[in-house]
Amino acid sequence: MIKLLSSSKWKQLILFTVAVLLIPQILPSDYYFLILNIIALNAIVVLGLNLLIGFAGQISLGHAAFYGLGAYISGILTASYGWPIFLSIPVAVLTTAIVGLLVGIPTLKLEGHYLVMATLGFNIIVSIILVQWDAMTGGPSGLAGIPYLKAFSISIDSDRKFYYLVWAVLGVLFCLSLNLIDSRVGRALRAIGEDPISASALGIPVERYKVGIFVVSALYAAVAGSLYAHYVTFISPKTFDFFYSIEVVTMVVVGGIGSLWSGLAGAAILTMLPEILEIVKEYNVLVYGAVLMAVLVFFPEGLLPGIKKLWQKRQGQVHE
Amino acid sequence: MNKDTNNSRIILQAMELDKSFGGLKALDCITFSLSEGRISALIGPNGAGKTTLLNVISGMEAPDSGRIFLEDSDITGLKTWEITKRGICRTFQSGRVFQNMTVLENVLTGMHTSANSGWLAGMFHWPWERKEEKELKTKALGLLELFSLADVAYEPVSNIPLILQRKLEIARALGSSPKLLLLDEPVAGLNMKETEELGETIRNLSRFRITILLVEHDMNLVMSLADWIIVLQHGQKIAEGKPLEIRNNPEVISAYLGNQ
Image (tube, rainbow over all chains, first blue to last red; front, side, top):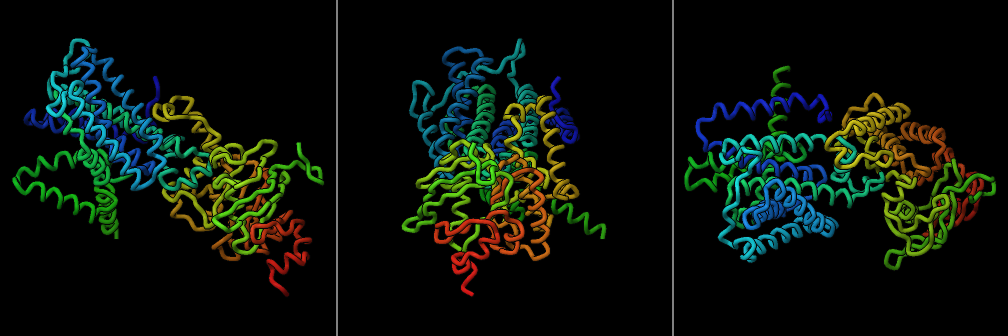
């Protein structure tokens, strides 16, 4: 048995697992599973993106494209060509990773705004292909008839069943990411994020690692995308336009850059917020924007680190 | 193997290095060599080309022409990380330790080239990866001990004073087990007492049997540390020799120490 984790992380992860297993018992209706599932899918994308942005310091506004490629490739292979899902998902994920590599090699030579523009451009190109390549993708009206996930004789055809699957996948990827940060590669990525010149002077091949983490984050997005396709069984290009890229980057920033737990919080909060804001009806977009602004003004380092700081300050005052 | 006149091995040989920025010749046909185990100092007035020379040796800038050999292999034009991997590590003027890491993590990052674990090993923490990490950590703590930094090993760098950050930067550089260590103004910004302390640290590096090239403005420090001094002015090498010879060289005195 491989020892997956060091002991220090166990406490948090056991809490996490218990919460994931308990929540279904207390949920009043199946509608909430839909939201929780979307949270998990977003959290998987955010997880990879947080490694890229928060640790290696590289911003991408193109991850909706990787999410979309994962969804469309697995969707097309199963719906149009009758591939079994246990083959279509790995092929979708690997193909997306290769696209990530091909995009990453030239674009990651760029820095700052230029990298943002290049990845944004890539996202727009993929969006156009998804809309225009009618024969393959179903065009603007989308791709229907994607089969549900099926393992042995169990078909994952309900929100409740998908909940366990997607949160398990998130849990595994979360552990792998925590491990990665706490390793030689993780230190190299953090070094690059803080000071690439110093990093290269210590013998770290900066460009190679930047491309590496870009590919890993694309891979995570593709995993989420392919799961999404077999969950909703119908996909259309609009889901994967660059607004989604902005949304996931916002989740990283609002949650708190550079901490995986904060990213999870960001994904949860920003996925739920629009649902909660249903109560203010037509003002929901306005309030959504105001909430985002308030978070960034009052907690510039992100919601979770900000609240933690406030809490510590309070504790300090009590002791005095 | 190349030997110098004292029959010690030559670690680095620079041959006719040229480097221009626009019309300005930052390095003009620079040739010199560094012998194993010696502390050599690179001095010269501001704008003499010292930092440019350091950048060229460490691969941060490519020379316009000329060659650099590390021991017997040609390293001209290699990337910085490749040069570090082959055995030249540098520190930076005004210091560049990773502020968001702990002291120990800084040294572990400096040991990047002495470990092998890749992406999958990092994600799955295979048993051999854990073993390698453990060995790395033991080695790093040992290194911190030698620099009297063991007490602050788990402190974030932003919590420790400047003098310790400077020591840490040298310790971090040694993590890559370099044959040649380039120190770019290590005592800039330190007071006299701290300067003496860091000078002692640098002197003690001889136990690692490594060769040092020191760029420094503090002449007292240079005279007390260096076995060999190379003097640059306007991108040209105007003299080199033992500290006493340099101190009495009229050309150096007029160029660098001022007319007296």
